[in-house]
Image 1 (cartoon, rainbow, N blue to C red):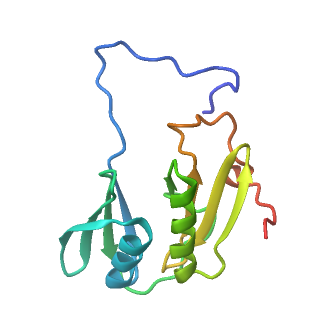
Image 2: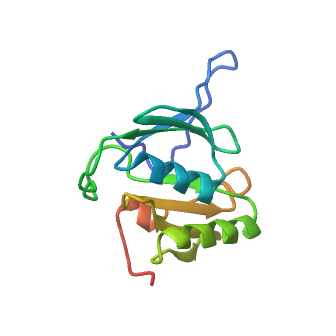
Length: 157
């Protein structure tokens, strides 16, 4: 059920417990290749590494669990589950550095700006979409949902 567009979420009682998203699980076809990708592009650090799993920490402390399931087809767009890992930075210089590092893995990486937010889009080693935004929602709260996130893709290249 979708909320009415003009209704704002109401804060809970001050004593209510809050939860934040702390981790994600990403299934990959080649663990070593994906560990290298996330460490190179997003400066992640390997916290734990097993035979078929690894735990990476982003510089901000977010946890990315990578689990190798061997070669498989990329999930089709519209499938249920996680569609994108979205990243954000408040530095245009860092957005450019990430864009350059991402381009080294995916030559189809591209940039665009929508509603005052700059985006870089590319693919991880398994073909999953990676989006990076600048500024982050902490610096510029979002007022609209980008058409690409509502499934209204348009040619941006």
